[in-house]
Length: 362
Image 1 (tube, rainbow, N blue to C red):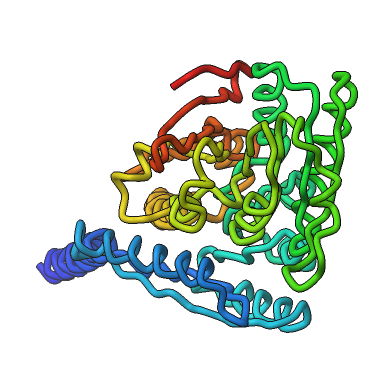
Image 2: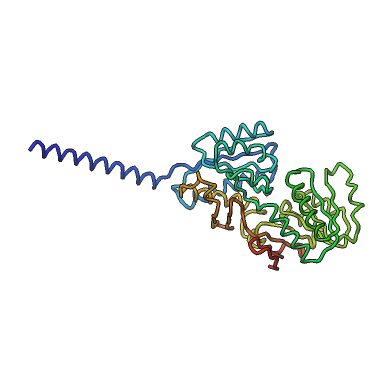
């Protein structure tokens, strides 16, 4: 009798333990752990970088509205130089609660932390960085920007499609890691194709732009690898019979308001269709991608694969609220679009497919 009572007590204990474990399991899944994301922000504040942070916060709020059980925390670390950048990244990466880090925004910055990224092996989302050397420098780097190699291919395809033989390239001194790579490789590839190419560097408004007088009216195409303000100044100061093609750095509806009638006919390289961008609450691709990256991080966190970026991004697609993000071998493979300003409005004009290498009208 005593043995039966002891056995019954043992079974009661087993059942209680099982119920506790089951309750804990249900609680764990019903109320997931907080998704903590680090965010690197460069000082002094740049309006474009502030826009990216706002888009990230919007992304988190969107998740919260869709699911009351979504918990998140954004840990922002500021820096003004490379030393502070390394310290800020290491502080975030060493925190086990931080599941991924967003930033830095510039190729030159990202190059400075490759060794620390490798040390911690934590997923690091680059804010629109496109330099291939940087993207390939660590398997833990994932960018919301498309590799410059693909942008170069799209521009080359456009030049070939239009039959241009005289091209001018204007690069900026404000981000040499990006501009030098695109400019030098584009120049080399176009010259191999037998195209007459001149290249100039924009330094600042205060400095006299001596190269303006060297660009003759018969120039068929000016490719501007520069931010929107520098691109607008150059367009305003040049009088050519040809057209202007601005890289993704200037792909924003702001170009029309800045240049007015001078913007007519300008082409802009972008990583998404303009019609799609108009439907979103953001005025450029960088903000839109920042918004979508939050949803992607939540999906990865839910799947438990956020700690395996090398394997995950070998072949991965995220279907976002506005755009889909397709990754192959760690690189974003979305198509490259070319917009056109017509009647002071931006319209979709052409699309370059990375898979087929073909350029077609939209």
